[in-house]
Structure formats: C-alpha cells, structure tokens
Image 1 (spheres, protein in one colour):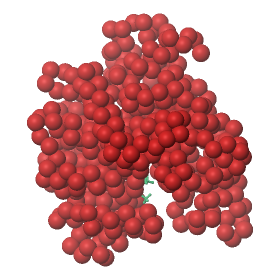
Image 2 (cartoon, helix red, strand yellow):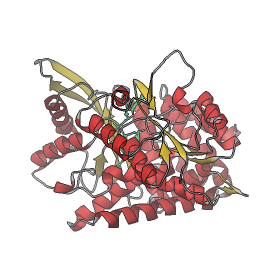
Image 3 (cartoon, rainbow, N blue to C red):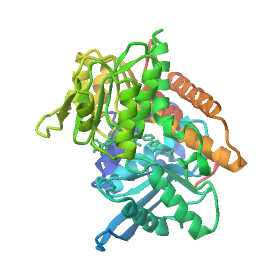
Image 4 (cartoon, rainbow, N blue to C red):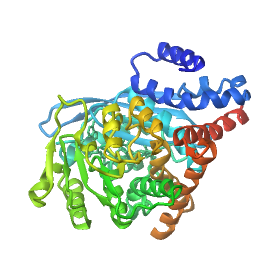
Length: 452
Ligand code: NDP
Ligand code: 2IT
C-alpha cells in the first residue's frame, strides 16, 4: 500500500472506528485518487480529501410506530448528507435490518462521485433505517413511513436534499413518504424521485439502474468490438435492479440464467425469457414471494438454498460470459471472483453498490477483464432521478423514448470519462477512471466555493 494511502487510512479509522464498510469505500477511492493528487498538488493544499471524508451533516433519529398487533415498535432512522458541492444532496433510502451508520456513510460517499459522473447537478447522500419491510403488512409499512417522515421532513426539500429508493424502498414506500411530506408541508414538490408517473415521476426511472448497467456493459464490450448477443449472463438478486437488468439483457439477445434472493438462487440453463421474467416481476412486486417459487412453475430450473457454511456463493460458479451483481455490498469475495474467471466470465457490470470485496476487485483487475465498478455502472438510476428533477422543475413530462435516449447517452458519457481517466495502454482501469473523473468534478467545485 502507498504510504500516503496508509497514513490517510490510519487517521480515518481512528476518527471513525467500527465503520468497516465506510473504510472500504474510502480506501478504494483514495487508492485511485492519491497518485492523481501527487501529480496535481493544488488538491492537497485545499485539504480536499480530508474534507470529502467528513459528511456535511449526519442526522440520526427515533422512528416509533405501532404494528398490527397494537405493539409499539422503535427503529432508528438516518440521513447522511455527504457533499453538496455540485448540487443538493441526492441519494436513496435503504430499509434493511443491516442498515447502520457505516453502511450509509459508505453508500453516501460513493453516491457523491457517482452523481458527479452523471454530469447532472446533484450532490450526494444516503439514508434509511434498520426497519425490515419483509413480512410487514401494507398498513405497517405505511405507519412506519409516516413516522419516518415526521422527522425526516425537516432536513429534505426539492432544493436541499432529494431522497429516492434503494433496497427495501420501492414505489410503495416512495408513495407513503411523499404523501406524508406533502401533508406536513402543504406543498406538492419534487422532493422525492422514483414517484409514480401518475403524480410527477419520470418514465424509465424504475428501469434506469438495470438498463443503465447493461448499456454500460455494451460500451465496455464495444471496446473489444463485441456485443451482448448470445452472451450467457449471471445475475444476482431479483429486486428492482436485477429485474430490469434481465429485461434489457433479453432485449439485446443475451441469455440470463440466474436470479436470487437472500434465501437462495435459481439456475435456468435454458435461459430466462420474457415470460419467465414476467412471472418473477409478478412474484416479487405483487405477491412479495420468494425466488424458490420459480422452480415450482418452471420445472427445469434448479433451486439452491443459501448455505452459510460455504466460503463462496455457488451462483457465481457457472459457465458464463458476463456477471451482473445486483444484490448488495460484498456479495462477491475473492473465491467468487476466481470462480467467475475460471468459468470464463470476462465482463462484470455492477448494478449493486460495492458488491465486490477489495480482494475480489484485485482479481478482476489482475485478470484485466472488463470490470465496471458500481459507481459508474449503476449510475443510470440516479441519472434518471436527475432527469425526473428537471422535469418536475419545468412541470412537464418527457416521453419514454426521450428519457431512455438521454439515459443511454449519459451511460456512454460516463464510459468515456472512465476511459479518459483510466486508460493504461490497451487496458481501461474503470475503477481509477470512475474515481478520478468523479473526484475532479467535485474537488474543483469545492475549491471554487471556498472553505465551507
Ligand atoms: P430491492 O429491494 O428491489 O432488491 C434487493 C434484492 O437484493 C432482493 O432480491 C434481495 O433479496 C437482495 N438482497 C438484499 N440484501 C441482501 C443480502 N444481504 N443478501 C442477499 N441478498 C440480498 O433493491 P434494489 O434492486 O433497488 O437494489 C439492489 C442493489 O442495487 C443495492 O446494492 C442498491 O444499493 C443498488 N442500487 C439501486 C439503485 C436503484 O435505483 N434502486 C440505484 C443504484 C444502485 P431479499 O428480498 O431476500 O432481501
Ligand atoms: O444507489 C443509488 O444510486 C440509488 N439508490 C438511487 C439514488 C437516487 O437518488 O435515485
């Protein structure tokens, strides 16, 4: 490890103990950026990195609510407002029992540079709660969301901080939270993105992260004069990002063969087609069921439950060309990365945030495959959120094809920036490219705005 990186990390860890995910995200970022700063010393003079790793504001609060049995429940709510140099704070809300300050600081940190890559005027932040929506009734989710908003409303606003969805926070939760915000403020504003198209949402926002990650994969393949036609693809998860990744892969002639959830995964060697995808969308979005049910309907597919005693995830151990991790952080470890490479995978496009451990990333980079890190590859979601904000400000709504065209163009531009800052001879180091391109935009804005 570069000694400057090591010293920086030691200080960061001493100031922010017990935040392993945040340390991991910062480490990955400064490993790319430190050598760039060595050649561009103005950033050191302004203590840019020291300021970047300190969020502008962190809010932690109580969320009391009453369940269907009349019991009082208490959850913890968070909003981490990391950086507003290039626009109002922008980023999703996550509802999952694993949510804590470390996870949200890592997500908020990554969001800043991802948002910068989109070229749109959005700062970065993240929030959420340790509330688990699984197994809760709609009424329980609504009461939770209303209580969450009774505190969060003070800190957000269409020109201040604009939340959206993430794990466990989809169209239903955006609706309940938006409704409560509107009631408290007596204002109909674009304070959330990911709204229904009936009341201010943008076309293509539900599809955007998955579609964007496939568009990014297309751009990476183009550098080798290849395309996605007939490529066998491993996809993890079966939520929003996974579903629309699979939809776009099918449209482009690829052959996705897996879906998963936190209980296990299905492998369908004959390929997941539109009919099978429609089944999964209904199962997950309407019935809120488990992926195991896929094999009850499509009997040739194989279901494998999660085995916590294994040191790897067998989903990543099938013959394939491409992998699209769409679940959560650190879902691909070193062993998984090696399995992917041994099975012939030479493209990884990360729909999830930080799904690969540093040891796994190291394997991908050493093998010089086409590896698109989440910050770049999954930026399509927040990009269309930015387009939703523009439409809300103008009080108009663009056609579906128009939003998709803009999304496609933004993903191509992100790819170009990664190449510009990450090219090393014939090889594009997309991790360095994404980190440095995002850094430059945010750092320059911070210098322009003085010591604030
Ligand atoms: P959803 O809640 O729609 O889906 C999450 C999926 O991931 C589910 O299949 C879930 O399974 C699985 N999952 C979640 N946590 C775990 C875990 N700890 N172990 C195993 N499986 C898990 O979320 P999204 O699709 O929106 O988000 C997926 C990823 O994409 C996240 O990393 C998110 O940060 C990232 N992302 C999302 C964007 C968006 O616009 N929504 C934008 C950019 C990135 P189960 O139901 O069993 O929990
Ligand atoms: O991680 C992400 O980029 C998101 N969850 C989407 C954020 C947004 O504001 O649309």
